[in-house]
Image 1 (cartoon, rainbow, N blue to C red):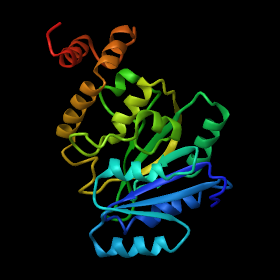
Image 2 (image 1 turned 90 degrees about the vertical axis):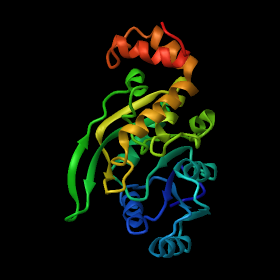
Image 3 (image 1 turned 60 degrees about the horizontal axis):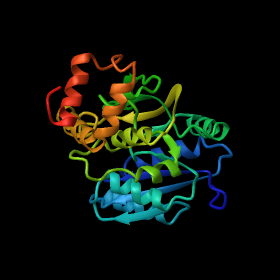
Image 4 (image 1 turned 135 degrees about the vertical axis):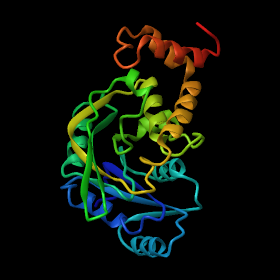
Length: 268
């Protein structure tokens, strides 16, 4: 790990995941090759003793560790990224893992084409009842903004330019429900002119547990956050929907009208 010529900064927020964070770190170190990177761990006010002990241990090693009172995922990521030295940012939740070669391939894509701002790929969900078990694949597909405004199909574990994060103002800490901070960021980046690249490969592993955001009150959170995103970016979203000839690929005519009606606050 070189701090003098850091290319990519991996930000690992951690809240009571001391049992898993070493797996996340190892998945980086085992697959980074000769890539110059740094790992920034943000302890978001963990309360369990195992995690506290693990964070103290990591702080004595080669990792940059930030301690903060519990403020949520958006704040944890933002605080870590603010101190990042890398040109590129990779957020990795402390209970997830990278797949081999994802990091090096994504960075190579960004290096080879300066017009690309975000690289994302496919994931595998896994659980732990009887060791690691595959509980489903998440095939993402090519970027489509009209699909994106309807649902968040790109995971947080995408690699993007720090300059794009700065342009977007970081993760929005005012989302009404936790778990979709990255959704608003992707929408925001696209509306600011960001270009997304789909790496059609397995890129990382998402751990599913009983308390995972993926399985906790998903529908209610989704609707609350979707309405928030629509209202925050109302003008630009409406403009895109009305001018994109392919808008009905993922949102049918009635759905599109409902979105515009919500955004404008009146019937069409």
